[in-house]
Image (cartoon, rainbow, N blue to C red; front, side):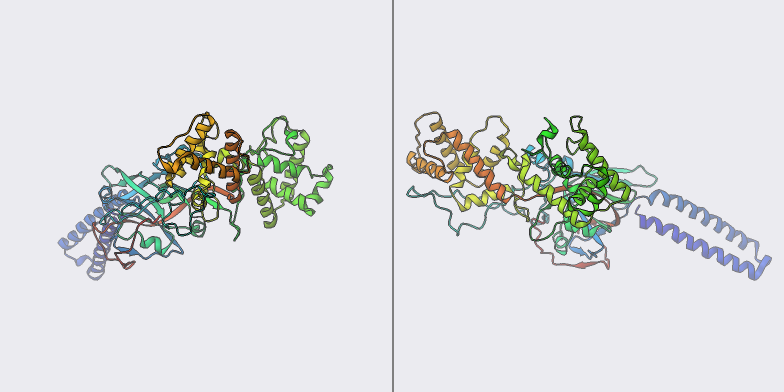
Length: 585
């Protein structure tokens, strides 16, 4: 039974009981013992009956009132939400699945976990990319009354020109319908587990298949769910400004003690046009990244060096030798302020690196302990300027010295290349459109797949080149390279892939890579990989993925479907039912 209906019954009985008792008291005051016995007995019987009924309804109310009540709304109408104080969480559910919910029973448990969704397990490379690959959890809200849109045609392979000069760049008038910068996302076919309170009867447990869910931050988002069935939870929190700034993806949702607990992840991308607000936890992964070379590697003997080790050792190298000098150094010098800030935010014993290993010089440990002791004793709080400087040191060291940002092997992680969220995949596609020669250089870079550490990046490049329609070009060029490597004659049944054309393309590639004509294929391949690495490195930007847990107050829980019971409500207003709802996410 719905919480509102449960409350209505005891309130009604309470009013009747109070009115009856008040009437009896007024009669007794006026007539005293002169009231006829049958009237007095009737009043007492009615009062006893009403009292028993009232107590009974209170007990029933206690059973039924647990949980969150469900409200019915016409999906063709739009909720009028105060977006400054509220944010809707919309779970897209088909009408068939939505019918499993008992709209007269309160929801006492609701849980959703994205870890088992199809999109997250889509490929090994995406699971390893973590912070760098774009979230595949994207939905396309379609009104069920409309047919699905036809898929967009894939771009056709670019025609090759005859080898008269260096392969020309693609003209500016190429079709605008380029492939997206990321692969087409699939619906996240996830399951929402719901438990509903049915009072004196046993609870109702249902599992509802969902096409996904999203927080709706704008009027446009709300308009886009018009005519889309689902469950809409109106949430309130003092963290709405933060949520709008980070635009998180949702990993887990759970209804706990009447509040909705959200487990979120979000990515901050470096932006040169405006300041990005970082916090210390944003740099956890970057600090633990292994670096390629260091001026201080001898201090840690054979230990692997991390970004944390590199920065910490650089700071410690500047420390004063005498402990008595620490105070003035930490408070009055820029190097000292940086040291106090860095070690207070990133303590050395949190496994960021190897400074706490037994092999480390005891003098280094004593330096760190003395700094931390002084900071704790004098309660030194780093200023924002020093924090930004420390964050800048971490970003610079990570981007320029870490293996994962400076090694071809890790480019399959599809790092971001601009503040708008474009990644390496989009960089490859846009570059081969602009310069036809690059597809052959990238094909050479990904030529070998023999079980070594580069295979994931090789496959990553091949899949992108195939996706944009260059499969035949790459296949014939690689076959030509294979024939050269194995000293076999090359023949092609297609004139556009004849030997003279392949020779010319290879000559242009060698010229672009600044290599001689007699260079062996292995060297050409390594040069192509370095060329690709350099192109990516010129564009890659720092990014950080963080997690956030929030408990949000539930204002309302709405079944959003015009096929179910409709109610008139002053909080809803009519919107155009023809609003386009394609690809909301």
